[in-house]
Image (cartoon, rainbow, N blue to C red; front, side):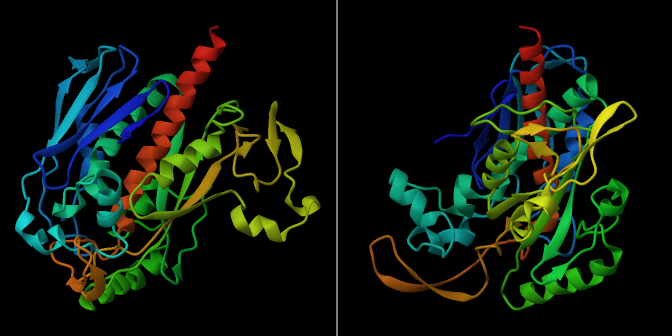
Amino acid sequence: MSSTYGEIFRIHTFGESHGGGVGVVIDGCPPRIAVSAAQIQCQLDRRRPGQSEIVTPRKEPDTAEILSGIHDGLTLGTPIAIVVRNTDQRPESYQEMVTSYRPSHADYTYEAKYGIRAPSGGGRASARETIGRVAAGAVARQVLDAYQPGIEILAWVKSIQNLEARVDPATVTAEAIESNIVRTGDPALVGPMIELIKAARSDGNSVGGVIECVIRGCPPGLGEPVFDKLEAELAKAMLSLPATKGFEIGSGFSGTRLSGREHNDAFRMQAGKVRTLTNYSGGIQGGISNGEDIVFRVAFKPTATIMSVQQTVTASGENTQLEGRGRHDACVLPRAVPIVEAMATLVVTDHLLRQRCAERR
């Protein structure tokens, strides 16, 4: 099973949802980078369950333990290991899932591939695996601050089902996003989105939506033609997240409705720099960043585990019914915002280090 991401700044996540713990090993982090454990914990707190009335009620402190690679607040250049212990496991809530596959979950496909699976909470398919990604992203953020200060990476809930927020990627702030439990940048949609999530949960159902993300201050030149194009790397990173079903950058699919004359981003010199008058490209051209804001969107499906009776089959091939149990998000988007930011940070950090290596050859 591939659990590794990155070329230079490499991460390897480990652990199952209801096992002893989850975490990450980071390899390739440069030495003498100031790393704050508090910043790592801050990001984990944004992702953790039980943080508001609209997320899973599972109670986990998600306290990060740094096991190696950092001494007196500085990276050593050796592997950094971070673990978060699971403290609120309830495998008894998943007894029916031992023999029956949850619809639209990874139960059947994992067993088809490996001949074995961890039925409690979905094992590695659980969003709890993303704890390691968020912890690694927090370390990567501090690498960016040391080598390329000024890069800002913000994500927010763009839409939930049919409710679409109006947010300007060029001006939205972290404060605006974090001011509400939905993590949308549109104050007018906070109340309706909360009510929509609550209604879905009350009905034993779930809803999905779209997260939008902007990377500001990214220097031109990041990305590797042909197969490691920056947007391809972002797409791979985002679509590796649980529950993701779509990715688009810049104009995305809507750009197909424009002509070339309308869609091309004209160049102009501004303050001694090459700039574009529009940004349909989403900050990336030819797979390489052009210095404009990188803007992309990620589609998340409705949570697969719902508290309603559904048709399914057993591991022995019999038709049956299954009703979801346990503690689950009726909508994953509010907690997915920091995960999207973390993966974007990992992509940018890895490509920044790759570019630094190329320039020194």
